[in-house]
Image 1 (cartoon, rainbow, N blue to C red):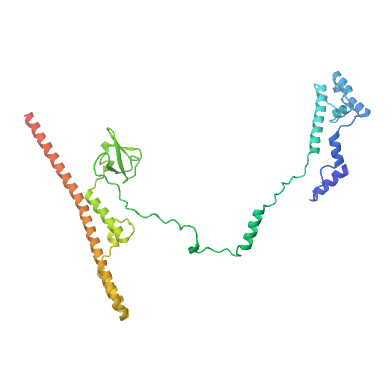
Image 2 (image 1 turned 30 degrees about the horizontal axis):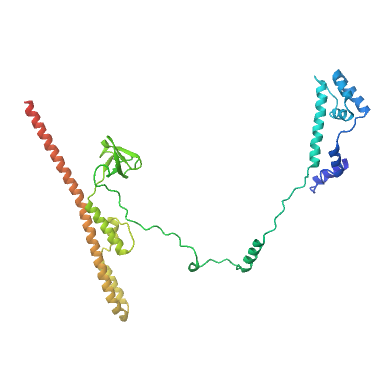
Length: 346
């Protein structure tokens, strides 16, 4: 046994695969029992070494033990000074029995690594693999656009007519604009008025604004319905003319319209002169008709824009005129009240 253990240690140190932990004979011994019978010489030596520390009960119990239990009790050596030597003897025997049971379990256990059995591939998988390997080309190529079977990437949504919210009255259904960062709103943000209380206006987003902060923290946004209809009509014309919706402000619309159609006509004439005479005659009529149509279109668009701008300019003038009239009436009313108060005082 000692030679076998030394051989296993040397093999492990050299880095070679170690031998099994225990042979079949050793496993048989572990399965049966490890303890042996104690000899009379061992018993006498144990009693002579541990006699001064054993009480009468412990000596009687040790003498009445079987030869195997005596060997189990003597396995850990002689007993030294202690309080209860009888309890120590029984504890030694119990520990030895527990060790035997644990070694038996280890001997009965199968230490070989149980590898899970691999399932053979199914016939369908084998057939699919062979078909793919035989028919698949050696190089994977991109499918041309004309032969693809999936839809094209989603295009951006068509632009729609987006106008800032504008109210037609003051109160529920109207629109307010924040004059500063307040009321959970950003400066310039607009919101519709949904409801009201005695002191508050309830707006979108479960927000409220005090009525007394009008023209200080917020203001009403009003617009002339005629100007709004004109802007919408102008946008419809542009969409119908170009075939796709666009969002154009007044500045953008003026920049997109050619400001100098005469220059474009001159450029076209210069191009016609550079071309040969045969093609010049055929293209001159088409270019004149296209230039005249383009000129008429630009003129109509300019008229529409001028009409819209005039209405937009007249709207603030009308509002200023109404404001001045109100101030004059208020001042005249206050003067009449002050005069009547003076007469009463006299």
